[in-house]
Amino acid sequence: METWTWIVIAVVVALVVIAAVMAGMKKKQEHDRQHAAELRETAGRQKVAVERRDAEARTVEAEAERVRAEADRLEAIAQERRTDVESQRASYTDRLQKADELDPDVKHRAD
Image 1: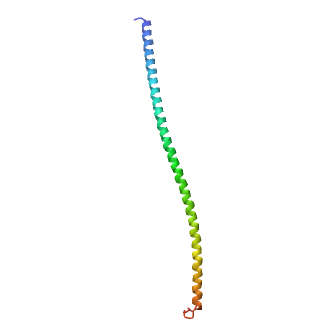
Image 2 (image 1 turned 45 degrees about the horizontal axis):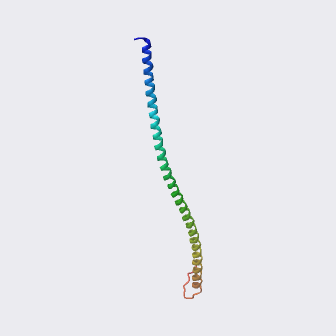
Image 3 (image 1 turned 120 degrees about the vertical axis):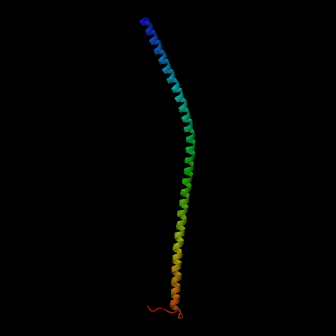
């Protein structure tokens, strides 16, 4: 065979290899596009779910803050009532002590 025949064969083989490589690259690109579209679709569904859960979390946080404020209010009321009870307890204890001091029938300890 002549040299030019081998050159033609080499060129044809090179073109076939190049065409095969390009076809493979094109196929990979198409596969990558489809995969990217699937990922975007999945991400879109996740975004909706995440936004819903975020809204739920914000609702629960707001409820927790409301409950904390109510607890603080109730604690203040309880503290006020405790103070009032202690004052009343001291008052009736003083009255009982005075009554005991005035009552001649109550035996007094010698201090």
